[in-house]
Image (cartoon, rainbow, N blue to C red; front, side, top):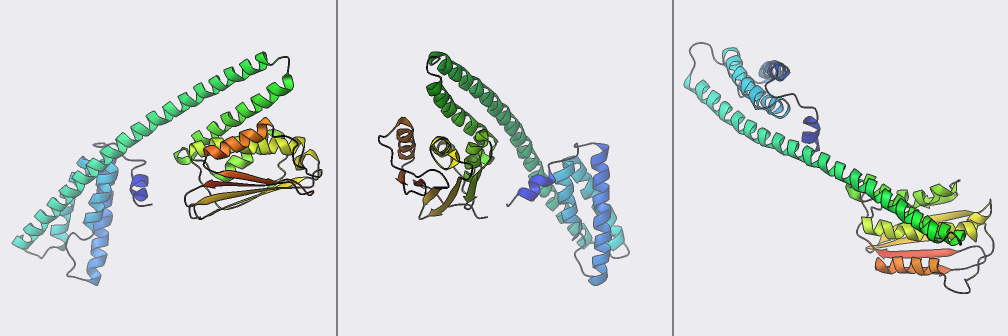
Length: 315
């Protein structure tokens, strides 16, 4: 991306005014001087400071303003005697030196401002990461408290308590995925795979391009996949050792389509009545502006999820 090379250049900057900064500046000017000499062999009429402009810019970005000013002065006192015409200093050489100095001064000012922005960005990034970790810690504590309340309240009905705490953990684990994702937006592949991890062997085939999800969309889809996985373990393909699930997705016409196909389980049949899990899936899809369609051929459950979605990233 544009600007990435500048950020990488300033990732490990030298302390402004340090001995290392001035040594680095001297090294850059030495390299620029040798380069200027070699280029001069090809074209004797080459601009005097042609190789020194980029050298001063690198020094300004990496070593700070003081070292860059030193590099500018060192360039002038090096280039004029070596590459200028023999004899007294001419007016053209003076003008070249003044123009070079003014140009370098502009680069130094811009680099100084850039380094300041980078420093503030890093400080803000560090503060943001601290806040995210604190919120993540508090969120986990909150989920733990809620889970404990559910277990104690439904001590007489452990099966229901287990179902509810499973859903709570599904949301909690999704928050962990979101907090570690770039721009707090996880990809669909990671989200789906994470829903299978608590249940042991991964018996699913995932096919599809990279799809980045917004945080709210990821949380809702997390609950949907949790319900589908737990249903497959209880009644569907994953209730038998040979059973597998084929999950594929694609983005077409600003719509994310996800196909969930179970095979190798017991013969599928429509539920006699709509349970809470089904209502939860439908509710989550409606909150995303989408829909869910399910079919129950004897081979196994076939489910299609469709939600509005922007373009999928290239990759």
